[in-house]
Amino acid sequence: MSPPVAPPGWSRWLVPPAALSVHLSIGQAYAWSVFKPPLESALGLSGTQSALPFQLGIVMLGLSAAFGGTLVERNGPRWAMTVALVCFSSGFLLSALGAATEQYWLIVLGYGFVGGIGLGIGYISPVSTLIKWFPDRPGMATGIAIMGFGGGALIASPWSAQMLESFGSDNDGIALAFLVHGLTYAVFMTLGVLLVRVPRTEKPVEGAPSILAGPQVSARQAVRTPQFWCLWVVLCMNVTAGIGILEKAAPMITDFFKDTSTPVSVTAAAGFVALLSAANMAGRIGWSSTSDLIGRKNIYRVYLGVGAVMYALIALFGDSSKPLFILCALVILSFYGGGFATIPAYLKDLFGTYQVGAIHGRLLTAWSTAGVLGPLIVNWIADRQEEAGRSGAALYGLSFVIMIGLLGVGFVANELVRPVDARHHIPAPSAASGNSATPSEKESADVQRQQPESA
Amino acid sequence: MSSDSSQSPPDRRGLIAFAWVWVGVPLVYGVYELVQKATQLFTG
Image 1 (tube, rainbow over the protein chains, first blue to last red):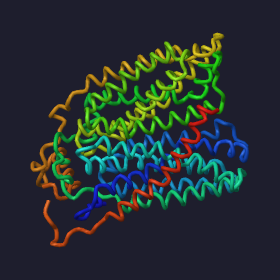
Image 2 (image 1 turned 180 degrees about the horizontal axis):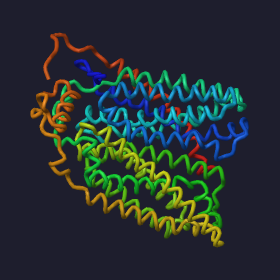
Image 3 (image 1 turned 60 degrees about the horizontal axis):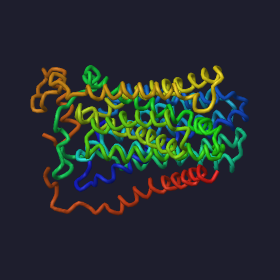
Image 4 (image 1 turned 30 degrees about the horizontal axis):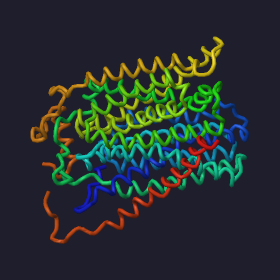
């Protein structure tokens, strides 16, 4: 399948809403917790069992983004968005069948396995296309899309809760809610499938750099470079630090101010969690756009360096000042979101646009690793501290020191990033011709094929 | 980059507006719900 080429006069401002229609949908994954209590009571499940569809979904997100990235690059964004639509929606439809027939394994298979493939392919589907349309502002462009992933949970969380309230929380009500989700998301994502186009020329914007400017590196070659692994460490450390706060935000703020004159209520703690989500979302678009102005390496210096300072401030003075605690946590979460949103543009700077989506997919394994590492550190240490008879802010002190150390490791990895050595580059497109082309010449010809009028 | 026809390309401002409203409305709903919840930090 050839990528859908934009007709003359096609506006690049049609591409961000196409990307958003996919990311706002698949971002629903982070609102899975809304379905947990009704599923537990309707099907007699434990908390661990009801978390299975989400956990499998995240595992499948990482795997399909890592292994499906090259297919996405080869077949183009419309193919990828169609696969994401079909998988994500049919995941819900299978789950509806599972809830209606009280077959929980169908929900795990549908939402977790099938829907999870939709999450991974959908996540990387617009990245490469957005970077090609916005060579002058790649950080802003990918920031819009990846902000959508955060926004998806904000929409789905109240929407799903209202639906369950209307339809009932028994298995029939849950089945109907899954059915409505599947159908609605299918219609919503169709906009992306219909609107997405790749630019017809290598210079879609007058005065902006060419899509093919700078080195071009294939995904297969990129994973053999130290730059890829430096960025892997950078993303993993940044995400771990963010999850360190996000994972235990509500109990953390309650514990910190438990023995003070201004304790935090359960309702106020829920408000704090919501505020962190807002900072996460704002960071995705705000910091990623800023990276277009100050450069990718500098913005990661801010995320990792200032992030470590914020953790130090919380550890040293957090329990004596509520505004300081909240402000530092908000800044850390904005850096967490910014780190996610800026990484595709950083990859484009180093490896070019050729297979940036596939390289991004492979790098997302850092997210999966951090998803295990962050909660493990904070929860394990808090449990051990509690066993040792500690309480309040003392439960988290050691975790924060570890987070500062991890951010330091990320900072060093970012400093080690250098331009990719020329031996990894794909030869200039004009070199590729004839049947006896070498693998890198064939890749070079592939660059040509993906940019129909670039020659 | 060459002009494919002598006709000027169609005006797509309506389509652009429709696409942004399509994704903007649910996003505004989500942000509104979030703000409602976040204010509990100061009132709860």
